[in-house]
Amino acid sequence: MSATRVFVARLVGCGVFDPVGDRVGKVVDVVMSHRQKNPPRAKGFVIEISGRRRVFLPMTRVTAISPGQVITNGLIDLRRFSTHGQEFRAIAEMLGRKVKLTNPNRSGKIEDFAIEQNRRGEWNMTELFIRKQTRTGNPFKKSPTEFVMWNEIAEHQEDVTSEDAKQLLSTVEDLKPADLANAMMELPEERMLAVAEELDDERLAELLEELPEEEQLEIINDLEDERAAEVLDLMGPDDAADLMANLPAERTEALLEMMDYEEAEDIRQLLQYEPYTAGGLMTPEPIICAQDTTVAQALALVRRAAVEPVLAAQVFVTMPPFETPAGQYLGVVHFQKLLRYPPGERLGNLMDTELEPIPADAPMNQIHRDLATYDLVALPVVDKNGNLIGAVTVDDVLDHLLPDDWRSEEEK
Image 1 (cartoon, rainbow, N blue to C red):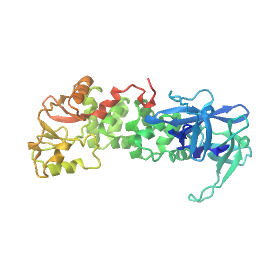
Image 2 (cartoon, one colour; image 1 turned 120 degrees about the vertical axis):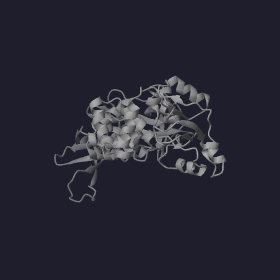
Image 3 (tube, one colour; image 1 turned 180 degrees about the vertical axis):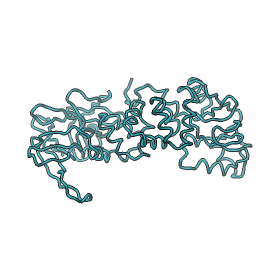
Image 4 (cartoon, helix red, strand yellow; image 1 turned 135 degrees about the horizontal axis):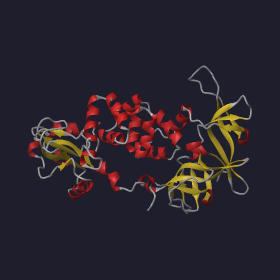
């Protein structure tokens, strides 16, 4: 049976189905529209379809809303979703907001609200589920809740407090970093910064690695230097260097002085190179071994949790020292080859010496060509003396192969 009254927070994640029962996506948010002297009206849903594309599903194309599912007439507009005029996103912009009620002694925080279908088929906001703002003296005791009607709301406060951000954060805390980045990019700037403030340092570092340059800078510029340095310490050196290359030189140096010495030195090294060269794109932390390292020892290095999958695909062999800047580059042993030989076999007997390293000043088109020609996920990068200084990986260059707005998942 189709419902005529639903609470919006319960719609998030519900499946969206066509008339024959095939799933076409899931609900991400509810799009509402402000109206003068009348309660906001639900205009439709933001839904996620295949390829993680987020599009708009108007209410006029919704034939039924039942527990756990939304039924459509089968027509889906594949154009990228964007708000217009008085529209707003209920989950991203309204839940967690503090409000004052018509009774001057009452205020609260919106945790959910209902939309109800009228006789004309329109879905309007009716009552809101509010958690009262009280001082209980016990931080572990939850404040009481109540239902209030829309016309009992006197004022929506526009400031974004940490409590508001925590409320929103609870809806995205289980997302993978890339999915969290997509969700953050759809928030208003003030709300995005508030959520970023509530993330722990490690989670924020992961998020920054996934965000585009503009959003990275908005967040890092909003952080105090001490916390910014802590977060940058936790990022991959190549990602941190890319971000810091866009900061004022004075702040970059101040942050480097506050960071772990070894991490800061790696970043300083990367900042010496032009951005769109092998040196500017590389990571200085590939797996490096000696010729007499055994297969068992190499696999132990590959298995470390801290090693990114793209770097675990190969082991580079050099003369000592074995940390970048390392000694003379000798060759590479691919992960699959390690699996085919006994544990005691030496890497010097297995390495591929035909793969030519690329110089630090190699341009982007050469990197693309070499990765594609030899079906590789990483290329060794050497200095003028042939010493290994890092590796440029396929994910380091992938962003530059995609259009600037690839995260919007909009069809061209």
